[in-house]
Length: 222
Image 1 (cartoon, rainbow, N blue to C red):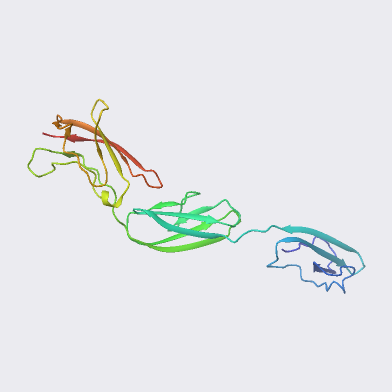
Image 2 (cartoon, rainbow, N blue to C red):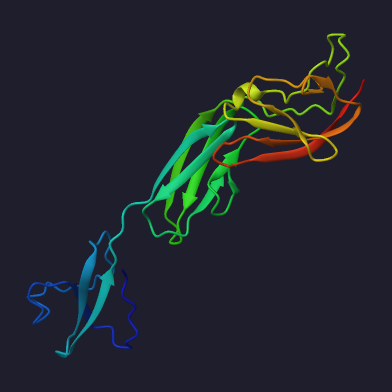
């Protein structure tokens, strides 16, 4: 805290939380008017003039926990950062780029990720973690289930990085013709019968913390 002197008379002395504020001498008053590292709670600054006049200013320092930052890899290519303490109103930065209050970051390359959080009072906490890119989902545009051992099955690539993935395939009428998990593939059949050439639609749920969903279509060629 720093006291601002608005008096045109410079002969002032100050004392913070004196045990005996009755006069400047017993209060150990001095010309020092700024103090740091004060504990939380109520405080009083006493102001003394050489003519014997005394005034006081009361103020309160709110108690708070230090700002802390934690970050963890929660899924393929994803980091979630969370903050505690400080004064709230957190803003997250990943590699210098602001993500606002969103503490979720997805990367497309391996390397070191610097995470910084700033609270509404400007307090800062920083974490630096190594990160290894593991691949994104790759969704094929077509497949040809004709038995030539090339593109005979349809399934998203890199599913091994998404243990809880769920894939639902629909025909043009909205009928569910297949459901895939992390390892299964679609052979272009429904109830053992070959389906015709044409477009089919998919919904892919990663089922991770971000609940990412992909929706689109692909073509079956015979």
